Amino acid sequence: MEIGKVNYKNIYKEAANRGGWSDRKPDNTTKWGDFYNAVRKELHGTEVLLDIGTAEGNRFMGLSKYIKKGVGIDLEPDMIKLAKRNKQKAGVKNIIFKSMDADCLDFPAGTFDVITIKHSPINFKESLRVLKPGGRLFTQQVCEDDKLNLKKAFNRGQDFDKKAGTLLERYKKEAKQIGFKNIKSKVSNIPEYFKSKKNLFDFLNEAPTIPEFGKANDSEILEKFIKNNRVEKGIKSNTSRFFLEMSKE
Image 1 (cartoon, rainbow, N blue to C red):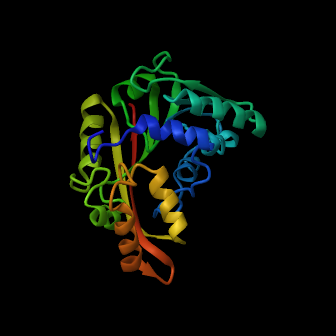
Image 2 (spheres, rainbow, N blue to C red):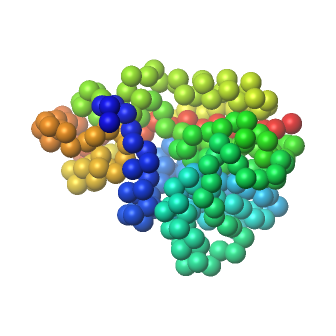
């Protein structure tokens, strides 16, 4: 694999084998709070909701009390198997899970009132097609300058070669061209602290932030990074996210 490139298929399969992403803390440090909590405030209990990139489904199922019914999809079959097991344990009745490609949604036009997409690629054309008139899409994505001091220390990383805001501007442009209206965006970039070396080490092994973590000299780079960025609250980095909301007229 080319250095700097991320093998998402392997990452997602490994995450499914670990039990999904639920052991990772939610993104509740963004200025608007956790993504699904932010969406929940926009719901009225009557919506049919599609969650794209649902992973193990636990955070999506947190919306079950606030919607009429929902569908969670993920391209990774092992994630969907895990989501179905989690659903059975939770006793959730109004949500189903399916393995599906977001680029080819197997739903009739105008099926959903709301689409949620967290940290997963977006096909705006397909999303617009399956939304009802007046339906809304909400997404949270990782900004290019997320964990920037880590990427600088390793001189490589996810989107390290891209200017901050590149994906946000591209998504806004694509959404507008496809036909979405009332496009609103928010950006949050705030400090994040890893409590220990183990927390940071586990993050680097599980997340795609530093591709091929574990290469020669990575352990030395990590030790130097910890020494240079340890503060009273922990090992300092940053969380950078953007939030997009749009509607179909």
